[in-house]
Image (tube, rainbow, N blue to C red; front, side, top):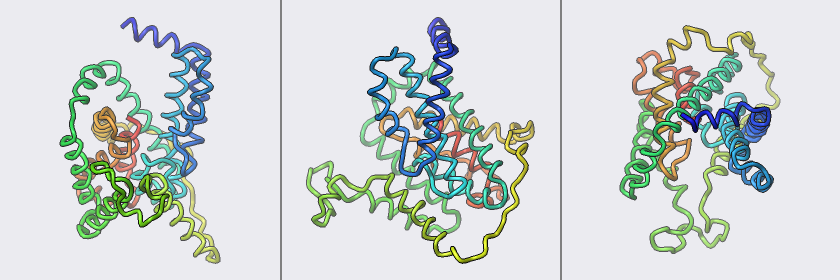
Length: 310
């Protein structure tokens, strides 16, 4: 309890609040730009924190990271270009909802879910971080293989009725991970003589090519078409109402717990937690709600954003 009180004294101080605001704004700005991540922002800012109080430096860096993860949903929702890998699943439903005239609603759902996911993970961090960390360090190669296998199986549930499309998508993902140095033997694999492929294909450039570049090409191909004006909803629909909290309460808690557990595992990013929570939400949804996934489902947006911020 004393540790919590000491932390609160730092966070609620004028300098602490100022650093939280600064870090969050910088993080959201960086995360909203496709190709730039919170890790890049932290790497650039880290030398500036050497002369700061360690606790205040920690507050600034955490604010930047959380802001960057949340900022990725902005371009994912409005432009179909995920700002960060963690916002991939948000793109699938946030963009269709925005195109239907509800961009504010989509952003409001994502921001609120991100906040709730962050708060739930904070509770787990201060209460169960020590025992869970001891357990997570005992996980071996077989455990991580099982986790990756689980992620591949979940792709089938995301694809809906088209099992062949899901299998093809999973095969493309596995194929993209093959070029580079074989970690088992140290030999080059599928580089075709190009030194640029020695380090393998990085996730972020691949995602930019799949989502951002493809969307830009699609927009250019329709540059001469007449622009359809989409009516935008009222600003008051951005905020959660009481009925929204009741309808999304179970989804928020379940997805946040999934994101928290996966986030604790070493080497597993927020994108895996987002995919897992999205799949779990889809599997327990009603048949009517399940049909909305990929077309602007509120449940899907909440599941993705609460998990990736947890």
